[in-house]
Image (cartoon, rainbow, N blue to C red; front, side):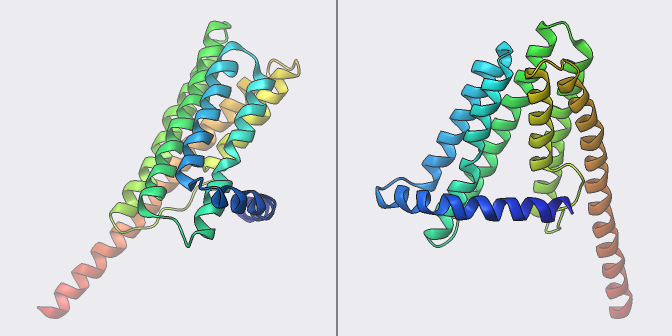
Length: 215
């Protein structure tokens, strides 16, 4: 259900951003340039504001910057589809953005004296990286790994809700969201590893069967 909801939201945003995408392409702006600009915006919002405790301002900047993830994809589609380097750059910049967001949150919570919250943020940072790595490694080995209850969109939404609550004066909001996300992220890592193990085991059984028939 979460994926269906996410796809619907993304489709709605794409319809809104398509005129902007066409305009940018018409003046010579490339999808890759938009990808990098969006990442820079996230860095400014996360490190420049979020890490200093300006959670609402940081959240607004990060959210607006993150919308470029839809914009650059729309631009690539209008140009005939994403390039190999464009797909690589987009994934790489996503990792940079995620690191900046969770690293900044961990820093702010630590300097504010909320060590449990900082620990949760660090768990989210590490687990989120592993979630992405497991998928990339599995796909590199010819398997699929598009499973899990806390993919990138869910991670960003949860930390955003937590930041909004804390920014509005509910200090427990961000740590609570981070601990929930930490648990969900660890579960997602397990789900993806289990999914890859299942595929690898199935492939091994099929190979053994094939060898047995040939023998």
